[in-house]
Length: 74
Image (cartoon, rainbow, N blue to C red; front, side, top):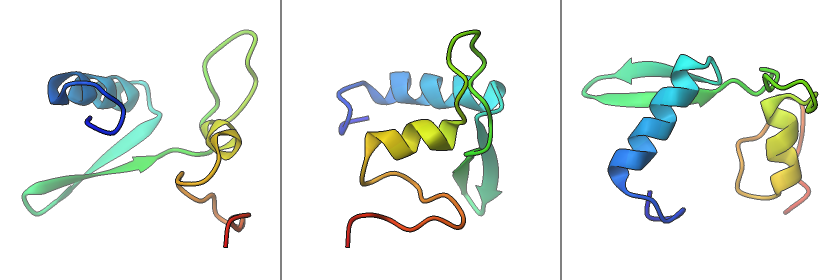
C-alpha cells in the first residue's frame, strides 16, 4: 500500500477485486495469505488482448517472473 501510495484498506479492496476476477489466486499459509498472480489470464477487455504476464513484462523489473523467462536485469 505504501509503495503505491494507497491506504491498506484500498490495497485490500484492490486485491479482493483481482481475486474475485480470477487474476489472483489466494492461498492460506498458516495465519497468513499468499497471493499468486495468474500470469496466463487474459485481460477482460474488447481492445486489449494481452495476458496479465505480458502487461507485467512491459512494466519492467520488480515484477513476478513468468515461467520459462529470464530477467533482462542481472
